[in-house]
Length: 358
Figure 1 (cartoon, rainbow, N blue to C red):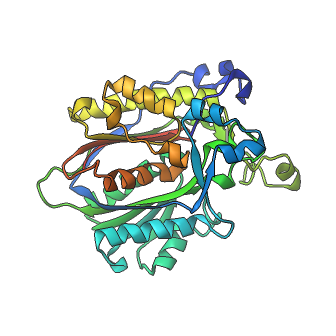
Figure 2: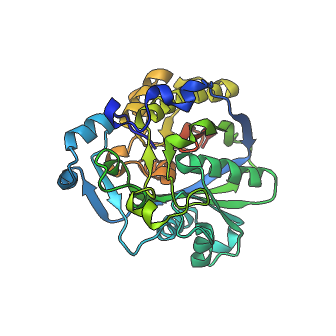
């Protein structure tokens, strides 16, 4: 959930970054979860495509966007679509791919930072619309949300409490950004992606071979929507000053994202005893092409092993990884038994990295 900016674009100076005041090496919770597999994937993107050229009227420079981020287009939800609507479409496609009925789902987890309402949860809206009887809950870790949801859902299965868990990552990021901010507004898009997790009693070695989830809350102000919660009510004054929109310290978040992927990816691979060259594919949160390029360099892997759809959809926050997984699967880039590396990172600041055997 980040882009790089020029010095004049940042919201806080680099020397005032809380991460620079108190340097922290990446230290998250490590673990592994065996006997769980991704039975199917599904995704949905709204029909409306907004190209860089169409944003020129807002004062956005198409070449600047491409050069700085790699984004060429993004999707926008229609006015009558909410996050749960996108979740529903992705979930139905995922269930169809898995050839399961809704009554087989034991748990629904929706990873989102843009819920339909503060309450009830978007997951409950999805449950109602699907006609499921499973418990349902939202999980908010912003752009790392899907990774937290993946680990959480896998834990329920590994503990023997569930056999089938639906994990959906979805966000309508276009509703969170200020249209007058021509450096931030072009970065984000709307989408949903889903995976169906099931128990795998076979001895194929499927599951999460190694994972790390973590957070550095000292950097929370670097990616923040100031008003609308219990800390700061959304008063008319706050609304008129744009405090309900997302604010970003782009430069420092960019540096943090590069570091957190580099450190966590290497720790996760080392913990599993796997060399980066053994990976079939790497799926990162699609935030910035320069972060993706850094990942290729840091791990010393072939560029074609890193899946990219950022150019088509922009930063879709919690939907980013499951959307990419679905596209990669349908493109024949992921097969049973493959080793894949996933990493999400964003507001919180929070991250999750996992090595999976598909």
